[in-house]
Amino acid sequence: MIEKIGSTRIIERGVGDAAGDFFGAFEIWKENLFRTLRINIGNQNVFTNEKLSVEIVNSNRHLGQITDSGIVLQNKILVETNENGPMKRHLEIQLPRGETYRTGDYLAVLPIHPIEIVSRVLRRFHLSSITRIEITSSTNTFFPTNYPVSAFDILSGYVQLTQPISKKPIEILAGLCQNGIEGISLTNLAGDEYENEILDKRINILDILELYPSCKLSFAQYLQMLPSLRVRQYSISSSSLWNSEVVTIAFDVLRPSLNGVGQCYGIASNYLATLNEGDHISCSVRASNVKFHPPEDTTIPIVMTAARTGIAPFREFIQESAVQLSCGTEVGRTNEDFLYLDELNIWSQLPKIQVKSVFSRENNDGNKYVQDLLWEDRNEIANLYFNGARFYTCGSGKNLGTSVKTCLIKIIAEIEQRNEDEAREILEEISLDRYSVDVFT
Image 1: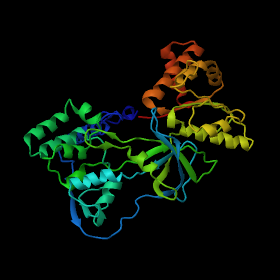
Image 2: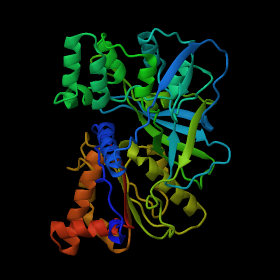
Image 3: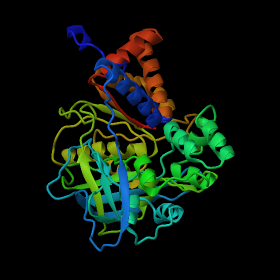
Image 4: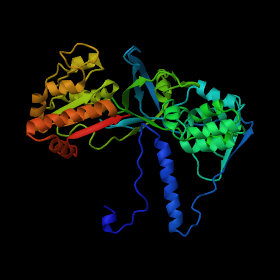
């Protein structure tokens, strides 16, 4: 669009697979961008000479909070760990002072690494849990600089320790190996072996340093290689009409798994699982996609499909409908999946709220997945479709998102008497305002 009004494209848009080497793809795109910029400005150097240095010092200065914090009001188990999947928990949080939310929004959480991982890093660099460091940097950095801070605090709360190492850092580490055989072996990992040996096993920088002990990397170099700790976003599972200053979320607790070196943790989920009533949690509200909110016209019917903790935002939608109904507001109907069994059973007794469930490992009259239930109820879905219903999906993009979309295309093809390609185009058209998806990898 910008090109059509006279602008010149500098470089092709970069794309990356969130389930693959996303950060490696960005690094390659960034290098191409700066290479192009150098050419455009006559080969002047557009790179800065970044330098990060660390001095180990002794100081008792306290490192204060870096974000606003809420307070944990409740942390309970929804489903225990079993052969079908990980533990699922429900967390209730008092928002930071002055913050409110809108139904459909996210809660952004800044987690803290487990002590086991932080301790591994400290041992590798011969530091203790009480070591204090002072960081100086010649460029902008997310680290606290120019005053003593705890090395433990930096590792636990500022950097991403467990992210799979991308190809560029592997090449750098290979060059730092004093053992030639280790250097060659490490170089090979940045080639054809990368996906199987690094991505699939989720090997991080620390794992590489432990596997290749001749690699002489300083603590400063290690910190410089690490990305900042990423904020995690969770769909809020409570309605602002219930309480505009308190939110709830539902989440899987990803169990530690062995990668051949150490244990792989779900950093955020295991952090949240350990929180107790009264604990402070670094968090804030983030707005969701403008389309992923209940329609303002409460008489418009809505159809919601979800799997597992993908039900979270739809618990919120249903809770909002229940509050509106209790106040005499006329609302439409909903069709949705299960997790909050007791609450959904209560709300489903209200007029115009309908809850349907299907479980893949149980006998469901031939239905195994959500899309099977949608297809069985396609006549009812068709009626809602013609009555202007809004459709929402939340869950795994690889499984639920794709399957539900395929099923909706089949239903549209049948009721509109169109072929598959034409039905797909119709779904794309209604996606502008009637079909909203919130999926995760």
